[in-house]
Length: 454
Image 1 (cartoon, rainbow, N blue to C red):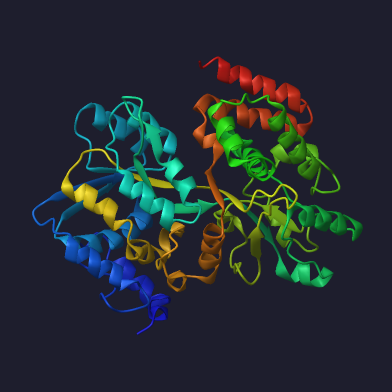
Image 2 (image 1 turned 120 degrees about the vertical axis):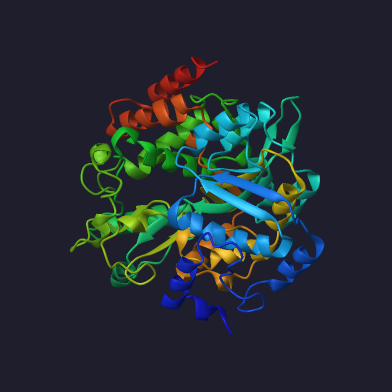
């Protein structure tokens, strides 16, 4: 039996029927192209019969069902009584529960900032050097992932507290393959080639980019993604880290340089569909539509892996539209950095089963089981998984980007204080993109908002 047996309509029905059914396994152990050796080894070494493991996270609906399918194998392997609860108010509730002394054994954090805050308050249990060393050795760009889950505890000592599991990729450029074929364009492999391609498109009478920054009360966030991606391509990961923590001021010349590069790419009417100064008036959900118009309003669109949800109905990713990695500058020699997001599992109420579950997340099978499901858009930097079990070729290609990353960094605005990352950074980028304020003014105003929090 091969994995492909599970990739069609029969698989969807099977997975849907398994939701929240403890003990109902989505596939018989030993079948398919999964790494069953990792499962067997884990099962032989762990017995948590009679122990309860409570997990609290942000996933609901199909995503929660996908997680349950993974949890069923942990139940089967260990005998543990595992209970997952999801909530759209996770961020608020986990703090309340921890303060009340009623935290779950494990919490699933969608934002590292909250995990860091809770570690500092003494609400998280260190996962230990063994887990950190394992991740460093077995995740692509492993040290980046260890850093993402490492925080100062209540005593001021830094430890590895949160295990990243399930990633998202933002460093993507979407395009229509047929349009590239018509003009004999090649996918650029460096930022220098990317800029040269845009110039060629202009020379051919085409517009390179569609850009939309509109998002209601969150207008401006797509521009912050651009800046974060460019920061990773123009400066070292250490500079990125100093920037998001404000160890390096927001109005440092390095940041101003990045904003000016953003303006070079998106502030040019030749490069951007419509009026480059009006991108804040274009909703980010509508901005990809220019790729699909006839004639095309633009040839490329930089956006994260979720954007196909807003493509025209019936669009086949990989056929009608495709993507490539937003390339790095060859002259900067900074490798292949990837901007993204992800979730982190942390122990908030210690018991043996909780530590055992963190060990389970280190197995290839714990990743492959979700890789093989439609729901949740699961991606992993685990180098030991079999990429053939990804449910689609597109998901596999996204996974390859993660596996080829030399550096991974979490969305910077999400790591900053809310008043900055989801406040003045958003509004400042709207002002800068519209041309109403220059880079020096915008970055100084954002720094002032950060200073006001200190």
